[in-house]
Image (cartoon, rainbow, N blue to C red; front, top):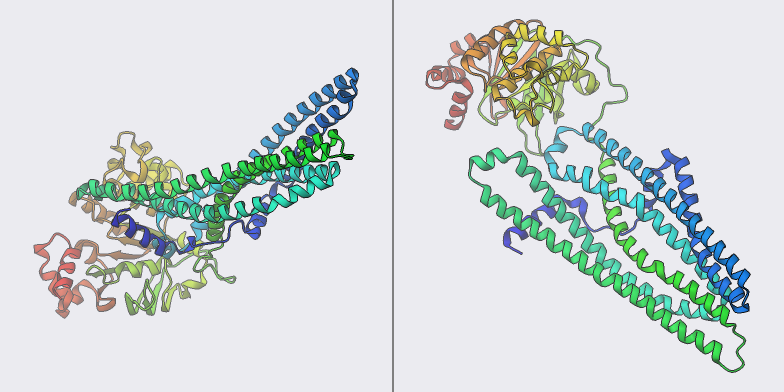
Length: 615
């Protein structure tokens, strides 16, 4: 394996601590997975009945053959032979009917359980805070929803019920062998430890190999997702060959572990089958000796019946060995799924959280400090107040804390210390959903969902009509720009909005935010991709739309900042200056220096970024 592959594997093992060594076939996990079928208890009952019926039918078929040989055939009774053959045929048909319904019920139950788990998992992921998404790779989340769920599907539909049939079949065959010849049955028991030792040895090897194989597949999935999402950057920097080489190392690593699993299985299953054949050979010698030994009272018919049942007893061993391999994979998938489902959100609404019926829009920060990582603060003792209807402009160099303030207002994160208030109430005491429904956010990198332009505009207000959308577009003075699209508002935006230009995507996001009629409006570098002519129209629209709304403008163009009721100049997580545009110019501080250099840069944010580096 290359050094790149070794390094990638080492780093991923540090990230995927949850995939460390675990006990195979955890009975508590199996019980939990079985309880997930409780919602379909009626269907589960009939399925278990079909499983038990089939498990009994198979030994009955073998016992019937042995009975016909011992009775009618040994006695030369033609009528008895015909009757036995007819009974065997009817029983054989019934076994296939039962098999059909067992498979049908198992498939339906497995699909229902997987669908329910997938929906539960999706709902749970939606409740996780932003920090969780920043610390978990997209590919790992996708892997839980795809390959892990498919492994669980196999476990529910196939492994559990097939294994149950085989186990019951072995028990009935063992009881029949004991009835036919107890001494020969003791021979079988003496050979059992050999089978147990083989199973134990290979099960340990398979458990380790399957775990490593699943980890390597998770790395492949994560890298694939990141490569697709970041394809624009990859092609822009000519990294196609290097990325392909890195992915090839990961794929080769996965292939190595997959091959190890297959080789282990390839050695394990033939050994089990060989051991069964050796056991039958030993039984053949022991049975022949009992029949032929002088003074023996052993009936040859009993020995024949014993051997039929012995074959029925040993046949499931190789099947159970294969099912065990699938069970390990299913348990690994279930364990990862339930671990994610059991991971609580970093925070949830308090039991006494207040539901916002209406929002005035007053926002206040009281001595707020915040850090994305413990001990690393990006905001330090921030205090300010925004009254209803005011526009607050946040300016500062990259990393100064502008977006962090926005994240706290939107409650994407919680303050490390201090308190953020909306309408005089601690934001942590408000119901998150009701708060977000009264906010509108437009970011620099806007995301559109697959669907039409109209679908994306009404995303925050699903009940809105096309007429409502057009009224918003007319207020924004954007109607002609979006109607000029190939199919107007019915134009499909493509995945992530790829069918639209960056400017068109931002227009859609502006309309989406305004249609929701927010009390608090957040513009996070929201016009960075809009040309000057469109930006002039946008400024006229914003003058109307920001009236009566509390607005936070991050690193916006100077024309917007001039109209702000308060400008907060951030520097290394602190408020360096505050005041109106005129007041800050008169003060002659950092903001004044930046304004003086405005003629040398198209927008204020770039100036401030340069000044921040110079400082």
